[in-house]
Length: 200
Image 1 (spheres, rainbow, N blue to C red):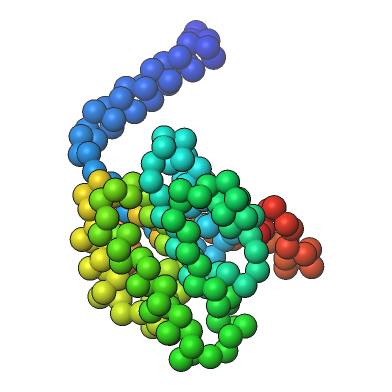
Image 2 (image 1 turned 135 degrees about the horizontal axis):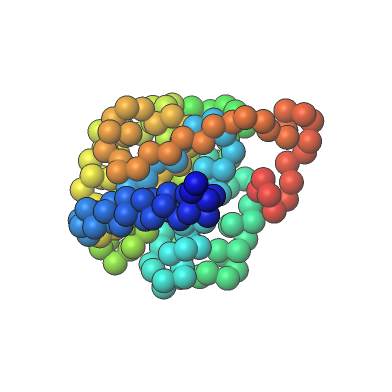
């Protein structure tokens, strides 16, 4: 009779063989494009986790936030105070339901996109985070083809992370990795206030 330890060892040996084979098969060396989407909480948080990871390797990083900027966030405070080498720009209008001004929002989106384009053309940047960019496509504030072309034509070794709900099939189609964050439960729906250091 085979013991639990022997079964476990055999299963882990098989798993290691599969993992090793996958690592060996992944031979292409280039930057990646990642879309973090879905209705759940944690898309921007995940992107900033990648910023922290890249910082650990001394990488050059650019962060541009669409929709954000009216309310201070912990990541904004930290980057501005502790990471002056990170390029950090916010659209500064807050959420569209706050502004309620489509014309001004489009102008702000176009101005913010003008800050993104040079980053996506600069091979010295290792990682670019475009936080909440998907909403600019959903609301048709920015031209989808222009965005798709800029993301597709960026330097070969530059990685880019796009966050936000939706984004459309064209955006998903050009991304190397697409992860969907699913909402199962959310404290806010139970009347719990957003928490400093957790939610913002």
